[in-house]
Image (cartoon, one colour):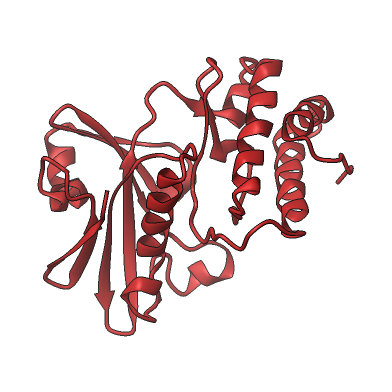
Length: 237
């Protein structure tokens, strides 16, 4: 697959040329919602929507700022050139990782809308219908030992390929209960090659498990299973 760039007013899209529908329709949430084809996902500051169009299922994610930056603008980023925008960089990274055979959602389209010196953006990928976030599965009591081992093996594949995830947490790992695990949300991800950063990424995941546990359940056992699957030397965070 070779992504193509098309323009539409103030917006520019990067998309899969094999799409059987106009990619611009994927970003028209108002019309899709009126047709009953949008499902808003709870949480995530309203940034994620599930779409159904012509029998296909997609996930649309708006890029929203968090923390102190959100007080200035919750969805605007500094314009530094089209190819340096977060949506374009993430979609191109997904395309590259898919070509490497890594388990990521299929890239579909990205849209960037320029507002003078700033821009806003969205990303669309194929939806993994049979999968659910590992963190949610764990809290609901549905996670089994093999889920954690498979998640560890999955992340190890990315690390061996030199892929750095900027925000690895338990809900960015999707599992289907049949041995399949995918890695989501590659925003600000990169390919620096294997290095010491891998330890910091793993520690970030451990902290996310501890936060999800909220002192109400033990997170150490699933963490140990994950590390066993990953094959890394365990270091308590």
